Image 1: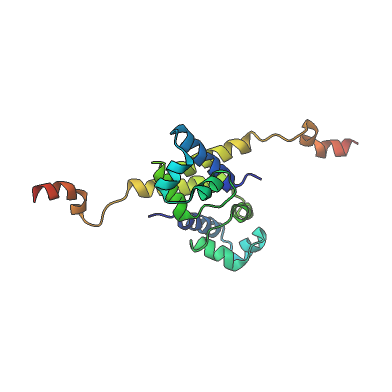
Image 2: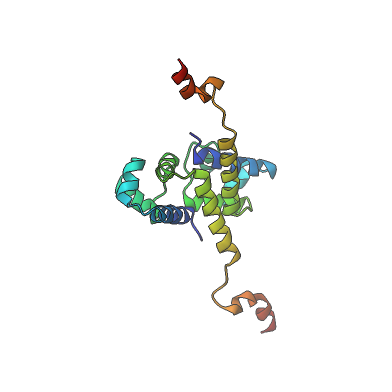
Length: 98
Length: 98
């Protein structure tokens, strides 16, 4: 299962890295602790709505644009999802054959 | 400030109502308590990523589509934002004139 906090963290992290900014810089600008931002970026902590707004602000990106990117990524993952083995695709049909 | 949990709750609530389903029905399908779902819908509680996925599942809607709708709403609110008084738009210019 793709989790919101993992995708959100990954999007926030890549935005920060694209701007060549450090965790220290963005956490200070967002007025959150460095440890909190780091955990959010790694998908280990759910960001509260207030702190998420603050982090997006610090990154100079609207929250809606961040959510749009998260949505796009999740949608792409869903449509490109492939099972581990090709057999899994046809397991119902195969079950009927066997 | 528009908060993610308020918009998310509002989108989840309108999806449930469009399906003419009760809190009881959706909370049971999502395996969350009725009180929790009600608080999430009213933007009073942050939904964890796992429970959000479960609620979207119960509504038969992908999480990415829910996030897309939240993003669209927030973006629309931002672009239609107007200040309380028309004067506020020109307060810097007016300050220079006075």
